[in-house]
Image 1: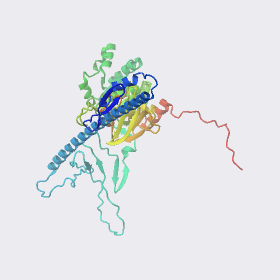
Image 2: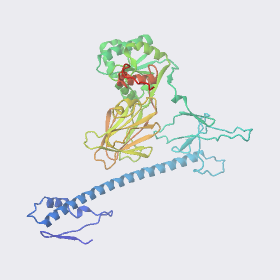
Image 3: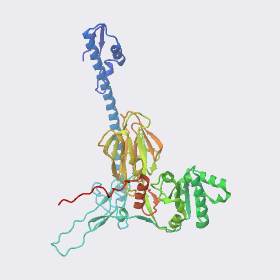
Image 4: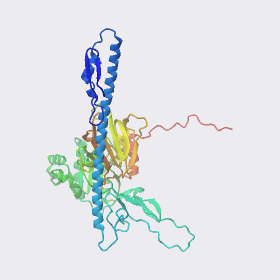
Length: 524
């Protein structure tokens, strides 16, 4: 391209250079400083040519800015595609190595036939109590659940086709877990009893140890805690665990409470589930959340007493604690299995999706918002590698069904029975009228990523605490945790849930229509 020459106040020669990647380097044509000086220079007189020249420079400056923004966006998109390609390549190489190793382990030295990996899957038969090795850790793990080989004397009768159903497993390092919620019989599919009946817990041996967690800075809670510990020790001969703070308060009151045990560091906290048979919480829903957060794996049954301002998960009244604990220790008792979310933060610098920070378990919800930034959140959402949507608004809530009556409800989400296994997907003030909440099944994995062209980082909070910053390129992966939180029911899970929304939310509460108003008259 020939150089352009402008002769207004002198001869100025400007050349257009070619960029390395084929794009024209826009800043070599006009520097931004030179354009600003020309735009700000006062126009002498009323020369129409100078006015047209000024307008042309403004148009050129706008075009240059658009080109620069487009180039930056293209570079960010290319970097993202390159990162995804490298992740997919590493994953495929790992799958090939695992499949090759698994086939070598399964090879029979006496069998002279050639094994074709593409046509010789290995099944595991769990229905008959036999376990086999999967053909690959990230492949399809199937078991035969129907064998319809009975000879039929009547040749004219149409036989029902047999079939096989399989569970899709994503490997040991994945967050996907198999749940036996469907039963099969002679080709008929029916839901299992676990999904349609209340859950009951029956003690095989008498409970020996109770952990009591209390709401801090409450005189009524402290008095009840002292009475309950004394009763459990004297009448039930149980071992009592409390928090270090509570033990100090008890010993300050009386040396009688020397028998109360506690822990010294986080390592002992991680082993509490091996020592504690039952957890008693004295407080509101926040105390239940705190109790659940202490257990990073299996959780003992929790008996929540209502001594707080919110009572969606605390059905037991403190005034009758002796009666309730007597019945629970004797058993059986109805429980609600409250599902939790397992959350992983994957930084942009991570080499693969398995290189994550320490996992976080949440009982209510994980919230991704814009923090103190004035810009909208820009979040890309995926469900098992399928694109869901791009969130532009104040943020996004990924909630459990137990948390459906919390922040998700305030943001427009639906109330869901806590034993329904699912993940709620609720936007916060979206900039789209058609962006409605979703409910995903329990087996999916949700990925929320901050794109590289986002104007600002996002912030993630887990059950209202432990805020983490998500910079452009970072991602948050959430799936259903394999360790639910079992909470004792006053009656049953459905009765307790309906009572909580009636009492806590005054759900659908209105005066009954007056019976002495105008009435319909039947036509002759």
